[in-house]
Structures are given as structure tokens and as C-alpha cells.
Length: 130
Image 1 (spheres, helix red, strand yellow):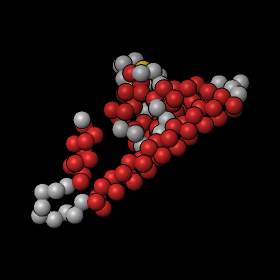
Image 2 (cartoon, helix red, strand yellow; image 1 turned 120 degrees about the horizontal axis):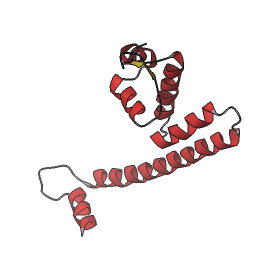
Image 3 (cartoon, helix red, strand yellow; image 1 turned 180 degrees about the horizontal axis):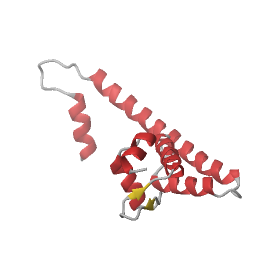
């Protein structure tokens, strides 16, 4: 199948599919005319990559997961290790965002939001820059 059909079946834009090919995540066959010829297995890999990226895995983590998926002698502990590391990263980001939210919420409540020039938000930003 051509890239348009692979795009439709996988739900990924053609540009993303070409990028995944450029970085070696997929390797479609080439027809006699030089055009890409995607197999059902390529579309399956593209869906796998789409779901992996949707869960926040980096391209390199997707490469590792795809390699493990294709390795029938893999240890599930290897897959779990990658997923646990991602989960820890997500938890860390949630903590950081929660702290940011609390700080900003405090500043918003401290600002009167009136016609006066006094603004605790700008004062805090100015103090942080010094």
C-alpha cells in the first residue's frame, strides 16, 4: 500500500510516517518504481508507535519498545523497566506542575487586579530575575 493508505490506516500523517522511516523506526519495502510499499506489519508498527508516543514515550524509548516487541525472546522485565521509568518521569512532572500551580495561584490571589500599578505578580517575577 502507498503512504496515503498507510497514513489513513495508522492514523498518522504522511510526514510523521516519513520521519519514522528517516530515523529507522520503520523500513517499508520499495516497489520497482522506487515508491514506498507499506505492508500490514508496517501499519501495525505505526499504530504501535502512535500509541507509545501518546503515552509520552520519547522516540528513543519507542525504538527500545519496538525492538522489544519484535524480540520474541524478550524479558517482560525489560519492558516493565522502561514503563516504570516513564511513570516516574510523569510523576515528577506532575509534582513540578503542582508546585508551579500553587505558586501562580498564590500570586494571582495576591494581585488586586485593579487600576493601580502595584502588582505582586510582576514584583515576584522581577525578584526572581535578579
